[in-house]
Image (tube, rainbow, N blue to C red; front, top):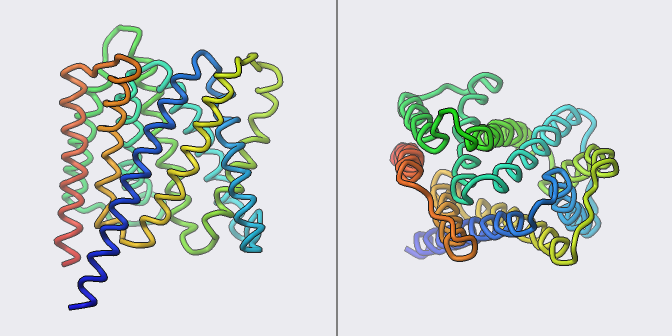
Length: 291
């Protein structure tokens, strides 16, 4: 009985933490949007500078490796390259789409992981996952709304951010227990900053104090979100709590309405329902299968 109560308490901690992570990611997106017409590359640079500093401090405290094991270098580098491109694409989408649309398109990454895990990690795609992929794709079409209008290109960039993030998470999934999470974050942030520095030097756009503070805040919220997410999965398995990560869409929609006066259209809402419904279907299937 005591063991069951402990499991329930641990799971509740996981749910609270992953919901806090989703809220922090939503505030990160809002800060990025409020920072205005700063180039996406510049926004990514400042965001990852904060993550680099925090990861550096954790590595020093735990006396771990900054750049990981020699045999893991190709995978750490792959995670870093795809992760950097994914953030740049996501920030471009945030700047040019309704906040909740950009967040929803980025949340397609778990479905990308399913496909890439099948191709590269030889993990089988179950029938329920196949149906979920179809519904997610239909939901994506409703958000992107293909046609000859100015919003299609930013929406496609937003979709590409999910493809890139999914690729990065596939590398993270492979690394698993092979590297400490703060080593992975440090490596990713370091490679990101070094690779973006030449672009920043040539295309740097002067910022106001408020824009600078917004970007620093974005980095802080992103780091808090990552740490909360990591702790959440420490208390409970992903199969039991990951669905709560989609609360970010609700938070993003509310923040967009409150601070940006953005209201998603009917087709976007229908797209959200299809994609979230697809993920809930996979979540329920995994939960029952485990039981």
